[in-house]
Image (cartoon, rainbow, N blue to C red; front, side, top):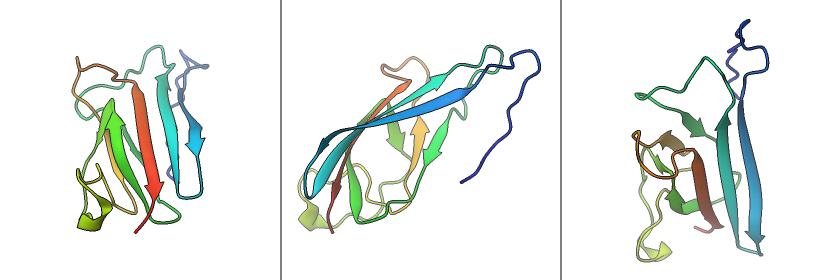
Length: 116
């Protein structure tokens, strides 16, 4: 995990908060809603580059769809996963901010499923 110190003496309570909720779950799939809040008063997330969020899956999850952000790369998705193909099937996805002015800029919805 990369931690970045963004302490600002003029905004001591400012922070960026990432909240996630598992909204559906069964034996082979789950849906997660991820929301990013910027509570910094003086440090805005400027475009470019905007924010980036990444993690490493523990199993064979893929991202089926996404709103409010996009994967930097799709990866090589197995055709047996279905049509249309997943939004991203990388083990270590990098999710990036959309350009300013697009809807749902600060709301990120991810539907993920465990599979090969």
